[in-house]
Each structure stands twice: as C-alpha cells, then as structure tokens.
Image 1 (spheres, rainbow, N blue to C red):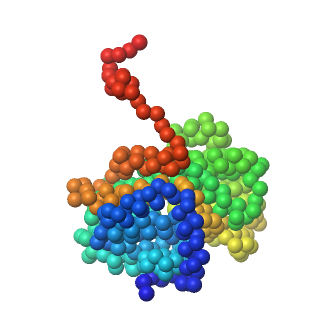
Image 2: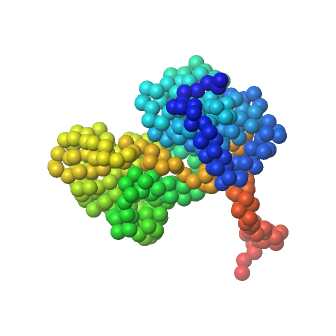
Image 3: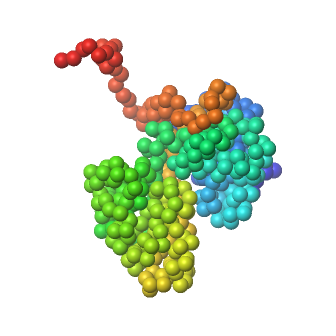
Length: 419
C-alpha cells in the first residue's frame, strides 16, 4: 500500500476520471511525459513537492514519476486539496500524498514534515512553505538538496528575501517569472478562476457591481479584465504608481483603499502582501460587502482585526461567513480568506496550467543536469525552456509563427542601415 494521508481512498475512481479529463487539455505536458517515459531523465532522483493537490498537479506528478522520479506530494494550502485527486494519486498512481481538504494548521505542517522525510534531491513549492521549513527546522537534510522550483509570486518573494539575507542553501528557479507562466496562468487562469470561485460561493450578479481589485500585478490584471467583461464597475487600488497608471489607462478607476472601502460591493485581494484589507477598511464598507482573497496566503485580509470589530459570525452558506460588525453592518468573508479560486472552485483551467507545469517539469530536468554548475541564488527559467513551452503550446493549438529571413535578421542586428 502506497504511503500517504488522505481523506478517503474510496474516492480514487472519481479522482482518476477527473485527472484523465484534465489531461485532455494538457497536450504540452503530455508530450513531455511521453519523452520522459522513454528517456528517464529523473531516474533515482527523490522529489518532495508542496503544491495545490488538484487534477492538474496530479498530471505533473505523474509526468515526473514517468520520468523516473521518486516523488512525495503534500498540500500547499489547507483548502486547495481535491480529496478525490489525492485518493487517486495514492491508489491508482502509487504516488505518496499527504493532503486532506480542510486540514488544520498542525496537520498541514505535519504533512510537510512527511514530505521532507523523503530526504529530497529536489523540491517543488507553491508558496515556499516547504523550503522555509527545510531551511529552519530540517537543516539536517538540506545538504542532500540539489535544487528546486517555486511557482507562485508569493513564494518567489520569500525566496529572494532568503537569498538576499545570504541564507538560501541551494539554487532555485522562479517558475512564476517565466513568460509562459505569469502572462497566462496568472492573468487568464487567475482572472477566470477567481470570478468562478466567488460566483460559486455567492451566486452574485457581476453586472453593475463595484468590484475593487487590490493589487494590479498579472493576477490583478486578469481579475480586473474578467470582472469588467462581466459588466462590473472596476476599481483598482495599488501602492505602485506605474501599475496604478497602467490600470487607469486600461479603463479602470484608480483610488486608495481609504476611498474605495466605502464604494465597493466586492473586494478581491491579489497583492502577495499582508493586510491589503485592514479592519479600518472593513469598518467603512457597505452593509453586505463581500471580501475575497486570491493571493497565496490568507494574510492579505486582516482576519484577526475583523474578528475584533465583530460582535458575532456565522456560516450562511458553504464558503461564506457572515460577520456582524460592532457598527451594525454585515460583511461576508469568502473561503476563510484563503485562495477563493481553490477554496470554492477548482482552480485554474487545465489548458493554462499545461504551460505552467510544462515549465515545472522541464526545469526539474534542467536542474538535474545543471544544478552543480549554478550558484546558490534564485534564477529565472532558462529562455530556451520558456520559448520551447510557448512553441509547443502553439503547435498543440494548430498555430504557427513567421520566421525571419537572413536579411531581416541582419537588419535587426546592424546599426549602420537606416532609411
């Protein structure tokens, strides 16, 4: 029996069907899987992965195993696990998985410990919790680690901070920063899945709503684009003047949270930081305001402060908690302040995760061949991998690009040819 800690092994058949359904929309990863199976580039390598346990992640895990890797998987968020997927990974694909939807904090970190007991050669992370524990509590096994990948904006921020302090112990690749990741996964994936999660949780009509998007990085851009497309009045709050200016020229209202707080009907945080929505903001909100987070961690909303300014709270429907404020108004927190696209929906569509996980798989292969040549730092995805993923995706869609002639290349590389 494959090791693991999951909710119910009897969910495995349903999980396998859903994993296979997701694979239909992941042609790039499927192509890599076929090559990995033949070439075995990861043979005898141990990998510990702390990722959102979804059907798309399952296809990545299967790809790595087909490539010869000995993989253990745990959850990167207590509410992002799909229990049937976790069951199928253990039962059908024999991949040890430690992941239960709704697990408490102690269990969450215990599962990370279980993944680290694998004594990995490589790590995969969504949010850098596994890497952080490895660098703090499990330094006894860190000398075995040759490299790792991080897929989220939040995780990359944490890793760069670790590197800047001179404490990072092995090379990391910032998969999130690949063009074929953040331009598509962050923008189109987050944009669609965030609205999907909020809609499933609340069944609100978006048309006519004042929607406040807090943070205008690639995720914020995607959410603002989709909300506007659904007929919402979009308002962007930012701390970066360049991003704020871009939001204004993209057709969104731009204002501070101090001003937006009393106007918004729906608030969505996507900053990667903490307390983007504070208790002071919440006190100014309309009666009935909805608050959701689509950043990696639930610290983006001041939940502790929300409890302090509330007289009571109750669950009014799945993933919706009503808080009765001391000022008499009610606000609604979705998905416990965690990633709403995974807490209340299924996360990003498989077609966009195809590119993200293709980057993950190819970067693990790259590290297996080159980690001993890399300094201890956070590196971008090699340009050739980024370009390869983009080309493979275009090919799978039946599309092509033009090729420059020798004359055109010479012109672009010269300085002495003008008008």
